[in-house]
Length: 147
Image (cartoon, rainbow, N blue to C red; front, side, top):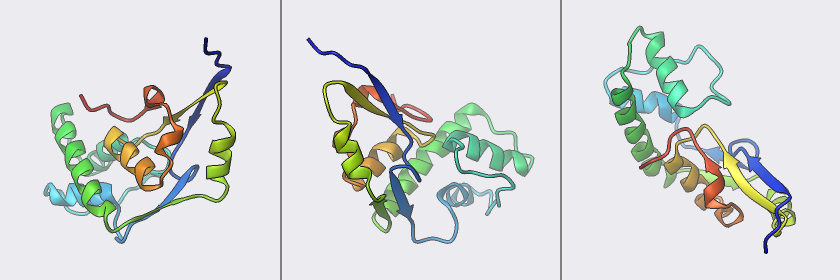
């Protein structure tokens, strides 16, 4: 019999890991540039905002009314772009995180993720930072689930 006292949901970026990409524009801007919208500078804070919302707001800022199916295609392109840039990026587990995650690894706690990243980007970041093994796959909640 398994007894769980609770679930701990962690954010990824800035909480568990730091990501350094070798680009002066972020992936959201790059994917929209690749889709023909040019470089759109965000006029809002993107930290803590889902990938879906960032892309929607960037397009809205240039008066483009994006349809849901268009945004799904852009999100898929974001995932693909992210995979390509991951080879040139570093994913650093923040100081103390590994020891902290180990200390909560027990039959009493389930560790999960709650993030605004897409599911592909979430799993890739956890793998690159070598901390995926600490998290229960059933408790990873993302911006968008791939079907």
